Image (cartoon, rainbow, N blue to C red):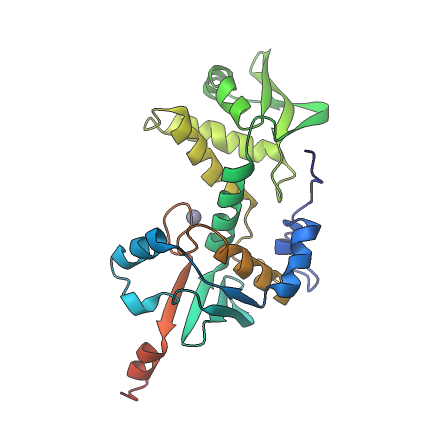
Length: 254
Ligand SMILES: [Zn+2]
């Protein structure tokens, strides 16, 4: 199904709407209900969280608790939230990466593709051209329709529908370089997952992007609906929680 391609705003202006712009209108409306969200990460995620080195059991949001977004943004990089019994710091880029990755995992198929009205050409170097030409079926599985044009030029006839990405050439180049740089990929599934991570990283809000309150709440709400809200697809933490006990200890109340 074709979806509107929305441009992601990198503007620093007060009215910058980075997160919502990368989100569909219907999802944006859901932000009205996003101030409080129920945390229910599921047992396997909680186990993974518990077993993670250096993360104490009380340093994660408790299960089935309400999480509220707080005012402010630290250095346009970290967001604040509370579950009522702890302070939660959230890395906005890592959190958005997780949201987009989960969404792509569900929606990215060969038919989730939009034809370009005017096909674009991309000039590559020899290694890139050879790799892209050999892996056309892999790109096809992601929604790209590529065709070797001769010389070192490739024609882009269709691209996957990814919210937040309007210029597909830098991403495509990233993906080709990723194939060239690594030999650890043994099967198409591994390649696809690595590609989805790169796509998520490209489409996510960056450190330095100002987020409006509505966008923060929406991001938080979307994050908690993912299968594993605690880490980004690279495996880095999306959040750090300081429990009330921890704060009391640090202020020497205990
Ligand atoms: Zn990441």
